[in-house]
Length: 304
Image (cartoon, rainbow, N blue to C red; front, side, top):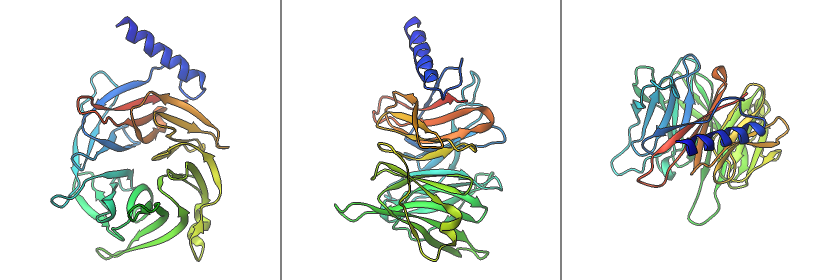
């Protein structure tokens, strides 16, 4: 017990020295069953939602990190065809309280699903189901931004970012590419009018003027490098412009407005999705386990 306490204190002091973790608060490690990937926080009450690739479902809990916090429970199961490989990517909230979640699809069944507060699931878009979808942003109730890539055999992946718009009629969906020239774009985040894209194949985070890209007559190339980082993944951002994503094999970093990286948590087995709970000054980061006898976890990192 004493050894674990000293280790926790040492970790807290190390992270605080990096200048990104709130002082006097320890990083919490919350066990999480299944194979988690994406994570989102409901701003109104701090409820946490996580995708589970093993069951192709979204699980949730309230008041995470507290001693009497409820365990994760099933929120919604996303439909999958028999023998279809399951994998869910980013989840994001729409203005009406619905959750949107991307299905990766492995080149055959990519889609976006809409989950109502009641847990009812509906297909929001299956446009171009051959695209392997990862990052997701909600611009309004009927407009999404999706990162995707395609891969044929041993050829390098080729990807981009598109805007998906739902029409008034059922299944009336339009997808339009706005950014090209990417390898494996994973995470998406916005700060004001600026769109940030993490490209795992290029080990870079690019930035693009979102409004200019949407207004352009043709997709714009990803060329403005915001930061260089090893193996970035899904991303999150704070309103003041700080980005968070995986950096390297076992850590999560924050990035300043100028693209300078600071490690905020390390010692992960495999970092995946991240979410910022601005109202409660904390970062939530998925740590995915590959060992059958070791559960995955959700890290709760206090931030300034």
